[in-house]
Length: 554
Image 1 (cartoon, one colour):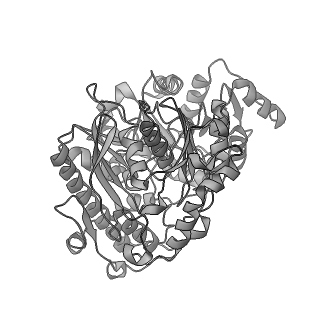
Image 2 (cartoon, helix red, strand yellow):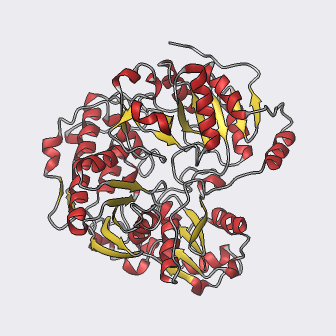
Image 3 (spheres, rainbow, N blue to C red):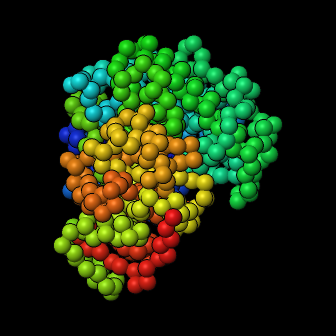
């Protein structure tokens, strides 16, 4: 069976392909269109499809559109109610519903040869649930798990709690709109001068600079209920801190407000996780939905709920519903689906293809004996490296395929990296660490942690050794590097450790502010040419900057 999954209705349009129960390709439209998040979540953009990523998925597998057994669309317009019934009073829903109803014809136009009758609608939160519960690896030889989905909104809900048994989803609870933890966090994002449905991670970063002194007032406005759901009452954030415009300077009150909402969100999520555990008794909880990208909350769920293991879909936002919808429909068609093989599901290039691009660009490049050793040498000398290797990542995290790398041992490198990317100075950068060395440096969060979706406490004796990646609250959002799954990255960090004694490198996404992550070789060259980066490591080749960047040490 060949099933193409499509996410299109709100934001982060994406496509994913499942063949004979196996995930073979998945990519976000932004990586092709070079438009951040693919589009804004506006009613009149609901018709826009991930045409480029869908076409690539089919080409990657050598499949024509007329050979597909089904196309799974991760939104079901039949489940939508009126703008008044949702309590959101969003008249744009009328347009969204109409465009979703027309999706089969739109898809047939975008993918010539496709029979519109092969398009199947999948409830939005069921697609999210499948992206977690069906994609997760097994635990103790079992793939049954509890699942929790939280985001801004679906057709008429903002949450799903359930369990997977033998690949079948049992829904135990769902919170109806207008109550939404995701929309509440979006409102705070907007209040703090950031872009909603995009910059929520900035609020999480800001929260570390504040104290949750408004927690008492928020506890009654944001609370879990006994039926597995929750309530989010309308909050006037101006009562706690004045509204900020884009670029306005935030104050202690704004950081305290961010800390208070973040803490209350964590508490409610822990309550919801405890409820679903009480209903299921499962050892493993799987998470999806945009709220599951809140790595601070994920760590608290693992630490304070009865679950032994928490697994988060790397593409937990709406992009992941393309994968989930495809897995769900493949199951409906009788396929025994397999866990996702990892997050490296996007485009990749052969050495010959990369060298052709380098020659066409008419720039000087070289092919060292070992690109890992060459990169480690530059990093040890406090250079910044653009790292482009293998297939691109599915989801918002750079996981060793499209990364900016640096030395973690110099405090000035945090400001330096944020300057390179053109972003706010309060935002942290993350560490990649050798899996076998991680337990001596990081604690509290899970190890292994391959997808950078939890925070870990940095050991006291290491905080001064890796200050660039130690956040103001003494934590770090780590990615552990397993030599079995990422041998090149592991070899590069090992070579860096031999030179510095530090088994950690700085890792942040290979892009600059407001742009999608680099995806193809031309993107990499453009980013390298416009940002103060010392070395581009692209496949087995390296391109050096003629004039080294400033390398201040502390």
